Amino acid sequence: MSNSLEKSSKLLSLKMNNKAIHNLLTYCVAAIWLINGLFCKVLNLVPRHQQIVARIVSIEYARFLTLAIGIAEMVMAIWFLSKISSKLNAWVQIIIVAIMNILEFFFVPDLLLWGKFNALFALVFIAVVYINEFRFNKN
Image 1: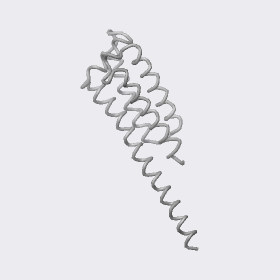
Image 2: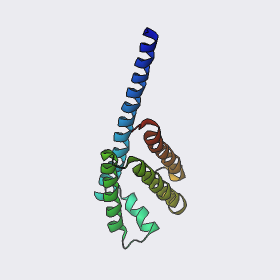
Image 3: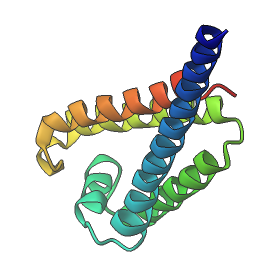
Image 4: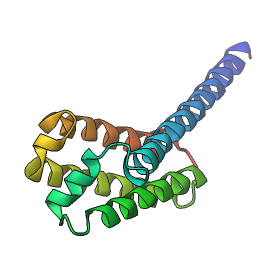
């Protein structure tokens, strides 16, 4: 009997750990979107982001598009925290980060903080989003 109770306790503990990890990763990912959107783009505290947009799209619309991207990133953070359609949200994040980093890798590697190594950080971020939603989120 105690063996069965011990197994149940371990299973419950594992589920609680998964939930705690999921919540922690959710807040971390949301913070990344919020910080990048608000501070780097909307408040333009990291002008490099606007330079990237200017070089890829057009200098004429760079500020407007950077602001729009920043607002969209802040909305992404709120959507992610809301957990509404969380699987769709995860896929949207993965696709957006992949596309954005592919474009930057080929068109503006000199403007990236770590150059072409930014792609490695993007892959890690994508993996975290995927694992967080499809491994740790059991809802």
